[in-house]
Image (cartoon, rainbow, N blue to C red):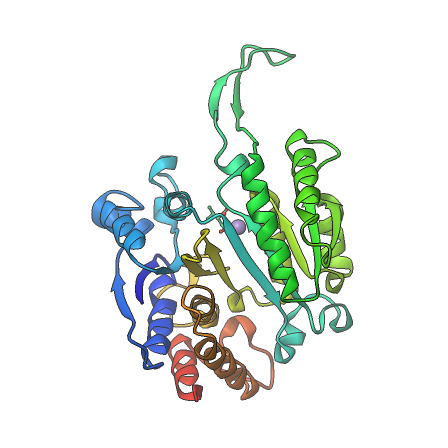
Length: 356
Ligand code: IPM
Ligand code: MN
């Protein structure tokens, strides 16, 4: 069970320390190896995804990833920016299926900006296709505008595209995930405007023939955004493309009021995976010992479940997190009056202590 530990930038190293403590406390024969990525990779080796880091990620059975990005790297050319590390890992490792659960812990119901009755008990799973769409489509760039009223000026352009096989495999992931939940899938697209997403809708409908026990609904992305804040509990599994999934998963995460709590998994066809918190590197609070390590700790639980099939160990971690929340411990991002404010390390130590 070889795990590549990639802490990254900002709060990444702090939250990763706590996740590693939890993993080490499980008593499993993990082999952990750390490497630099993102701005830290650029600073040390001149590239956000150094060769050695990519090699380690390829060799390992799973990757635990912190977060990347810091103000000082914002002015670098695109190919050298920290974000390229995570995009490169997704592409190089073929991590096409991104699972982003949005779960509201009952103890944190007050943290949501939505009324408790709208969000209490919320448990949805967003499945975002992660290696296609306008994120990776070519050609892209800046060129001379060939026609129309702006002909002759510069124009920026990207290419939205999805191959049939790309849509099929993510649709299978969604229908299979739904079978383990309440058997409902909402496929989100923009079939009323985009050829790519009319094709998406047609292919998802075809794949659905193999899953007659699962209910499939199609929804336009603008409506999905509206329904997510109006009646989010109507959703179970949402499957969508890379770009729409990026946007909707942030909205869904915030329904829970605590993006610092949400883990994610990015899987290839063989359950090799990269696991990371849904939040970013939060450079504004880096080094202050106040970041919430729970999303990273819960990401390691997802790793135990999906890549290593260690369901009991994943449950141990999830239950320890629930116990710590029930005791009232809160990092500043989820703090409310009447609870106990703790820092990153204290939170990590409390989870270790609560493992049974
Ligand atoms: C995410 C992030 C990334 C994305 C960025 C950092 C490239 O926003 O994982 O959602 O857009 O996919
Ligand atoms: Mn995003």
